[in-house]
Amino acid sequence: MISIVPSLGMTAMDVAYHAVKYLHVGAAAVSIALFVVRIGWMMGSPERLQQRWVKVVPHVIDTILLVSALWLAWQLGPDGTRGWLAAKVAALVLYIALGTIALKRGRTRRVRIAAAAAALATFGYIVSVALTKSPLGLLSVDIFGQAAAVAWVR
Image: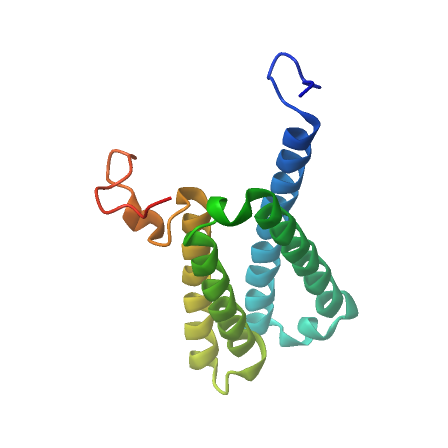
Protein backbone atom coordinates (compact mmCIF):
# COMPACT_ATOMS: atom_id res chain seq x y z
CA MET A 1 0.00 0.00 0.00
CA ILE A 2 1.06 3.54 -0.64
CA SER A 3 1.48 5.60 2.48
CA ILE A 4 -0.20 9.00 2.34
CA VAL A 5 1.54 10.06 5.55
CA PRO A 6 5.04 8.66 4.89
CA SER A 7 6.56 9.76 8.19
CA LEU A 8 3.90 7.77 10.08
CA GLY A 9 3.47 4.95 7.56
CA MET A 10 -0.29 5.57 7.43
CA THR A 11 -2.49 4.60 4.49
CA ALA A 12 -5.69 6.35 3.45
CA MET A 13 -7.69 3.69 5.33
CA ASP A 14 -5.62 4.31 8.48
CA VAL A 15 -6.33 8.02 8.24
CA ALA A 16 -10.06 7.39 7.64
CA TYR A 17 -10.23 4.94 10.57
CA HIS A 18 -8.59 7.40 12.93
CA ALA A 19 -10.77 10.28 11.72
CA VAL A 20 -13.95 8.26 12.35
CA LYS A 21 -12.59 7.05 15.69
CA TYR A 22 -12.00 10.64 16.82
CA LEU A 23 -15.46 11.61 15.54
CA HIS A 24 -16.88 8.74 17.62
CA VAL A 25 -14.95 9.75 20.75
CA GLY A 26 -15.97 13.39 20.27
CA ALA A 27 -19.62 12.44 19.82
CA ALA A 28 -19.45 10.32 22.98
CA ALA A 29 -18.01 13.27 24.91
CA VAL A 30 -20.72 15.64 23.63
CA SER A 31 -23.41 13.03 24.31
CA ILE A 32 -22.44 12.52 27.94
CA ALA A 33 -21.97 16.27 28.46
CA LEU A 34 -25.49 16.92 27.16
CA PHE A 35 -26.82 14.13 29.40
CA VAL A 36 -25.21 15.74 32.45
CA VAL A 37 -26.62 19.16 31.48
CA ARG A 38 -30.09 17.70 31.04
CA ILE A 39 -29.86 15.95 34.42
CA GLY A 40 -28.91 19.28 35.98
CA TRP A 41 -31.87 20.95 34.30
CA MET A 42 -34.17 18.12 35.36
CA MET A 43 -33.19 18.77 38.97
CA GLY A 44 -33.11 22.59 38.89
CA SER A 45 -35.07 23.97 35.92
CA PRO A 46 -37.17 21.21 34.34
CA GLU A 47 -38.85 23.68 31.98
CA ARG A 48 -35.55 23.95 30.07
CA LEU A 49 -35.95 20.32 28.98
CA GLN A 50 -38.91 21.40 26.84
CA GLN A 51 -36.81 23.54 24.49
CA ARG A 52 -36.85 22.22 20.93
CA TRP A 53 -33.05 21.99 20.56
CA VAL A 54 -32.83 19.98 23.80
CA LYS A 55 -35.16 17.40 22.28
CA VAL A 56 -33.42 17.29 18.86
CA VAL A 57 -29.65 17.77 19.33
CA PRO A 58 -29.05 14.71 21.57
CA HIS A 59 -30.66 12.49 18.93
CA VAL A 60 -28.44 13.97 16.20
CA ILE A 61 -25.31 13.46 18.31
CA ASP A 62 -26.34 9.92 19.25
CA THR A 63 -26.99 9.10 15.57
CA ILE A 64 -23.46 10.26 14.72
CA LEU A 65 -22.20 8.14 17.61
CA LEU A 66 -24.07 5.05 16.41
CA VAL A 67 -23.14 5.40 12.71
CA SER A 68 -19.46 5.93 13.56
CA ALA A 69 -19.57 2.92 15.91
CA LEU A 70 -21.03 0.71 13.18
CA TRP A 71 -18.36 1.88 10.70
CA LEU A 72 -15.56 1.23 13.20
CA ALA A 73 -16.93 -2.23 14.03
CA TRP A 74 -17.11 -3.03 10.31
CA GLN A 75 -13.49 -1.90 9.87
CA LEU A 76 -12.28 -3.99 12.81
CA GLY A 77 -14.21 -7.07 11.72
CA PRO A 78 -15.31 -9.93 13.97
CA ASP A 79 -11.79 -10.75 15.14
CA GLY A 80 -11.13 -7.15 16.17
CA THR A 81 -14.28 -6.87 18.28
CA ARG A 82 -14.38 -10.29 19.94
CA GLY A 83 -16.25 -10.13 23.24
CA TRP A 84 -15.83 -6.48 24.09
CA LEU A 85 -18.19 -5.09 21.45
CA ALA A 86 -21.07 -7.24 22.68
CA ALA A 87 -20.37 -5.98 26.21
CA LYS A 88 -20.48 -2.37 24.98
CA VAL A 89 -23.77 -2.94 23.14
CA ALA A 90 -25.38 -4.59 26.18
CA ALA A 91 -24.17 -1.75 28.40
CA LEU A 92 -25.45 0.79 25.85
CA VAL A 93 -28.95 -0.70 26.06
CA LEU A 94 -28.77 -0.45 29.88
CA TYR A 95 -27.47 3.15 29.64
CA ILE A 96 -30.37 4.14 27.37
CA ALA A 97 -32.93 2.55 29.71
CA LEU A 98 -31.41 4.25 32.76
CA GLY A 99 -31.20 7.58 30.92
CA THR A 100 -34.87 7.34 30.00
CA ILE A 101 -35.78 6.71 33.64
CA ALA A 102 -33.54 9.58 34.75
CA LEU A 103 -34.96 12.12 32.31
CA LYS A 104 -38.57 11.04 31.72
CA ARG A 105 -39.96 7.93 33.29
CA GLY A 106 -38.75 8.14 36.89
CA ARG A 107 -41.77 8.83 39.09
CA THR A 108 -39.88 10.49 41.93
CA ARG A 109 -36.86 12.75 42.14
CA ARG A 110 -35.03 10.07 44.13
CA VAL A 111 -35.62 7.45 41.41
CA ARG A 112 -34.47 9.88 38.71
CA ILE A 113 -31.27 10.77 40.57
CA ALA A 114 -30.49 7.09 41.24
CA ALA A 115 -31.08 6.26 37.57
CA ALA A 116 -28.86 9.17 36.50
CA ALA A 117 -26.04 7.98 38.78
CA ALA A 118 -26.40 4.44 37.45
CA ALA A 119 -26.43 5.73 33.86
CA LEU A 120 -23.20 7.68 34.48
CA ALA A 121 -21.58 4.59 36.01
CA THR A 122 -22.70 2.55 33.00
CA PHE A 123 -21.22 5.14 30.65
CA GLY A 124 -17.95 4.87 32.59
CA TYR A 125 -18.02 1.11 32.09
CA ILE A 126 -18.62 1.55 28.34
CA VAL A 127 -15.58 3.86 28.12
CA SER A 128 -13.45 1.42 30.12
CA VAL A 129 -14.41 -1.43 27.77
CA ALA A 130 -13.53 0.75 24.78
CA LEU A 131 -10.13 1.61 26.25
CA THR A 132 -9.18 -1.90 27.38
CA LYS A 133 -10.89 -3.85 24.55
CA SER A 134 -12.09 -6.24 27.25
CA PRO A 135 -15.61 -6.94 28.53
CA LEU A 136 -14.11 -6.70 32.02
CA GLY A 137 -13.28 -3.05 31.42
CA LEU A 138 -10.94 -1.63 34.04
CA LEU A 139 -11.04 -4.93 35.94
CA SER A 140 -8.86 -6.37 33.16
CA VAL A 141 -6.02 -3.97 34.02
CA ASP A 142 -3.75 -4.37 37.02
CA ILE A 143 -2.49 -1.43 39.07
CA PHE A 144 0.58 -1.18 36.85
CA GLY A 145 -1.53 -0.68 33.71
CA GLN A 146 -0.76 -4.03 32.14
CA ALA A 147 -3.21 -6.73 31.15
CA ALA A 148 -4.20 -8.84 34.13
CA ALA A 149 -3.72 -12.58 34.14
CA VAL A 150 -7.49 -12.98 33.76
CA ALA A 151 -7.62 -10.69 30.70
CA TRP A 152 -10.10 -11.59 27.99
CA VAL A 153 -8.72 -13.44 24.97
CA ARG A 154 -8.51 -10.90 22.16
